[in-house]
Length: 268
Image 1 (cartoon, helix red, strand yellow):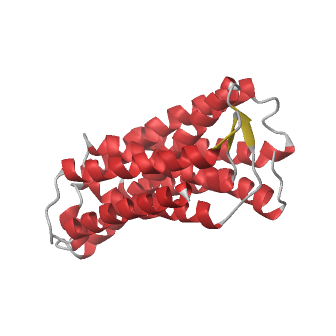
Image 2 (cartoon, helix red, strand yellow):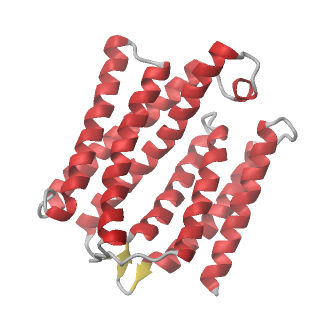
Image 3 (cartoon, one colour):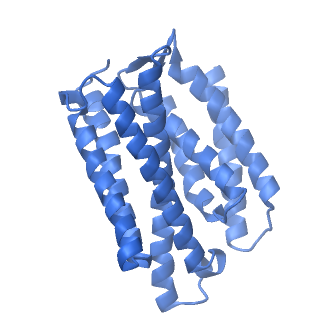
């Protein structure tokens, strides 16, 4: 019952945050950063307690498919709230809050075989923490890339559209995107390094696909950064490269977990 109450509370707060942001986006109400941050922090707190109740298990952390999803969504919201204090990223809440709420619904309805990591296995936990943080940053970058893509398209068709009126200038949107990509690349490199140190074999059968797709996504992001500073890539080109890298990372992370845990029912 406690888990259900926490889940309902979290969904309620995320719904309020989404509704206020949607009304603000349409110009119906004016919401201050303070109010949006307060609602976000309350939702994040409830979300965090829910994670503590569902992920922690007798000296270990259960990082199964749905538990990992609700953890990643919590971290995405946390990163977005921090960014929102300094950067114009309010529009991202319209996508992130509903996605976070969806992971909460999934963890209530669906179940997957548990995959445990011992609480005292600091090496593995550091690798997981870096991986999850990198994935969360790239998830934000993917949403930012989608907004940048549609912003570029709208600028060519309708200068006074709702999207154009609410988004920051194009140059600001591009700068934000590349800041996210840079931070994500650094964290992903650190995650791969710690994985090579603390994981016995990154190319063992259960991890081979995840490792391969992580390396491929890293190559795409590095290629994007090189193209940015040598060829001046921007706009739609930058969006497409970012989305391609994020797609590879998502296939590596969620694809392997989906096949192993939900199709073959393999825990560990």
